Length: 104
Image (tube, rainbow, N blue to C red; front, side):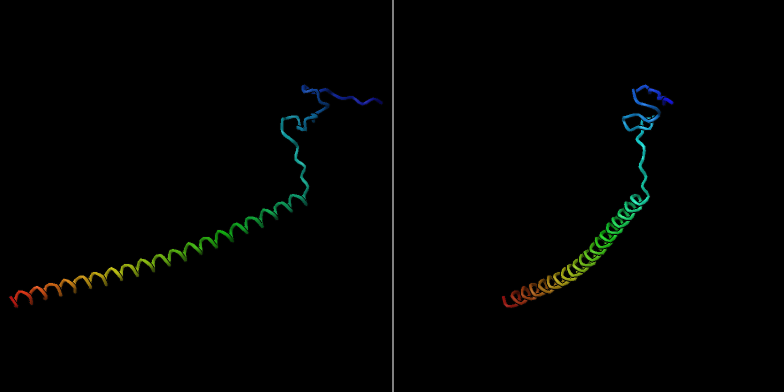
């Protein structure tokens, strides 16, 4: 008994062409369950690693923010101290001027 084959419009035999398409222009998928699970596990591990790195970056950023807040607080305290020192210096200058005026 002879087998019959139909020629497609692209010169291929039957429903699946020699170009690897399924007759609708899309390549067929070779779904190997173990390979798909292995790839899904790899993706899950990669996602977990990315999440860990993101957490570490966030922790580092929070620590830097705390350090910057502390530095700002110290600068504000220093500014207050300088302002007080400037006021005292002004008072000393005024007292010295008064002393000089009283001597003349």
